[in-house]
Amino acid sequence: MDDLLQQGITAYRAGKRDEARKFFAGAVKQNQNDERSWGWMYNVCDSDKERVYCLKQMLRTNPKNEKANQLLSELTAADFLLEQPSIPQTNLESQSIMEQKPPSIGRMEMILARSKSQSKTEQKPPSVSTAQTEKNVVSQKTSDPTQQKNLQIGIGAVLFICIICLCIIFIPNLNKSSIPPTTAKKQLTVPVGQLSQYVDTYSNYDEVFVTKKDGSLDARPNDLEELCLDMLYYRKKIIEYTQSGETDKADEARIWLNRTNAWLNAYDENDIGYMWTIIEKRNK
Image 1 (tube, rainbow, N blue to C red):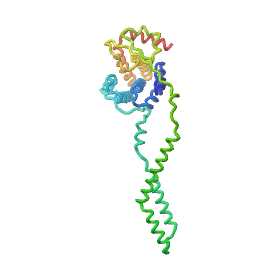
Image 2: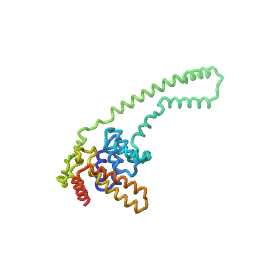
Image 3: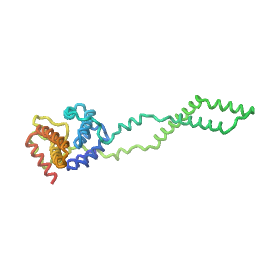
Image 4: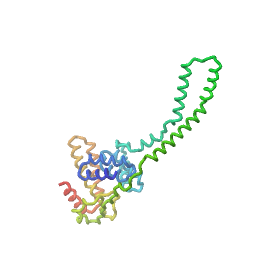
């Protein structure tokens, strides 16, 4: 999951939004409880329906996420239709399917036994001899449903125990020494107005937290960078939608551009300027 998320972040920072969306979708599919994956998935959504869905998943895992609560409140206040988007399904559906238990082995074998006994009685005509009558009495006693049910339950229990024993014997133990050690992510916290010192080394860090003008840090890593990239994205979309005559989509892109600009104003102007320098330097 970390590999998919990191690949998506790399693609997103390189301006490959569609490719990044595929990686983020794979990450949330592998782990639906990862708040960071849903946060990055939010950045590549194309509609408010998808954004609302991602925000709800973030709040499901972390109800104290103030930024997600604020975004969700703004979206729901605009009376958007809250429908589940076409984000790849997670394992919630598979879990509900697994809860439907199939019929037990004993029950299935009992039904087969009954059908076989019925086919035999239809093929053989009844005999009036005393010996045949005694055989029929014996067969009727052995075909009692209660006895057959108990017998099948016992057979099923024995088979289940045998399967468990075979699994314990033949499944090899995991070689712990072959598991590569997890590497810690490189994080950087930048004081207010000090981003100029990290222009050349910014790309060496996985997660950068730039301090806002009020001294707080955003919960989302690389928030300042993402806001700048969002500004570029929405400006591009406004031009595309305007040229194609899609006024509704162009108006929606303008709304998100204004919201992004409002969030961007929480940061120091010098830090914003140097962030544009970092982005331009990376795209060269």
